[in-house]
Image (cartoon, rainbow, N blue to C red; front, side, top):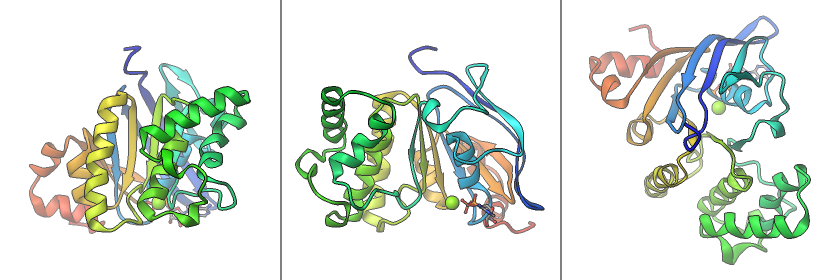
Length: 242
Ligand code: ADP
Ligand code: MG
């Protein structure tokens, strides 16, 4: 199991904002090396769950374990989880290379090592030629690749992706779905992807967790979910009662 990493277990994970329950008592085990997608309508808690995994959202209740050890109290940079944020959240005043170097600087690596790792990460996403550009000088697809390189540059055990195709047009989304799936196979790491796009979830995932109102209401392989009476799958996705 060392090659594929460690399992992630969530126990009774809840998040309150005042009286509002954004996450409602979530139990979930993510297998080492799996591609799991959180699928659900806007406001169902997908980003909150992903950011709780990343360490940017502090749970109100519950625990997160990786390989049997609690990480609930660990700071984000101690978790070894790479994050592609919703909308990418690139630093607008930093070049592509500086954006990708950022997580390494935060972790205190020295400069020659940072330069080598940044070059490697940019090559992985085929952005070598654009290292000196600013984010605003890039297309949406190129910005997404910068976000991906920044998330992967420290060789994280787990990659967390919050609507990584959200801002892209349909053709590009399709190409990037294939690339992301290839990247997953190549790296052999655990990927947790967030989307509200049912087709994307079906095409890419080992398993899909369908979320509604802060809960996981269905969990299974695409084929198993597809085999549900179609009306039910669609109704769950839309958040209707049946
Ligand atoms: P999704 O990513 O599925 O669209 P989110 O996880 O972003 O949903 O949000 C889930 C719910 O929690 C939404 O109703 C949202 O308004 C609420 N929420 C998220 N973050 C906060 C916050 N910082 N303060 C108050 N409410 C929040
Ligand atoms: Mg979201």
